[in-house]
Image (tube, rainbow, N blue to C red):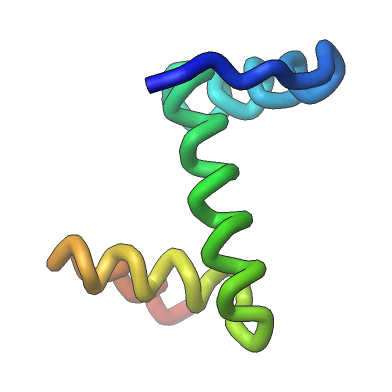
Amino acid sequence: MGIVKIDDELHEAIRRASTVMCRSINAQAEFWMKIGMLAEANPALSFTDIVRMQLELAQAPMPEAAAA
């Protein structure tokens, strides 16, 4: 484990997003870093594709939206 120095504005954005997403600030930063890393490694995948792939790896399938 280590310390990562980030810009104050980015830290504030993480803090705000963590509140909305019900995550700790550290968990929100880790989520964004992981998704960003996966997006760089898989540029053809959308955010939804990446999240779906991660949920499948965790054996937690993404729930389908209810039909209108």
